[in-house]
Length: 85
Figure: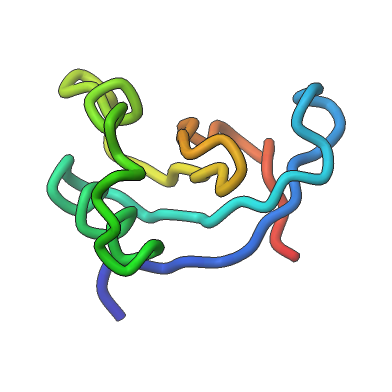
């Protein structure tokens, strides 16, 4: 089982503002991992990714990111901010 674990997760109301959005969970170790995984979510439709550098800045730590399918952006998941469907 490598990287690329993708799952639907609901956002907890404690984060605020995104209730009801559908997220894909990305287990990321490098920026290349992130780009590959996000592209695979949309079957390589690169027009979705104009903000890829903003989504995964080079200084961002590796870890689990939640990709918001509605907003087409991602946030680093800290602690138990997200729960599995």
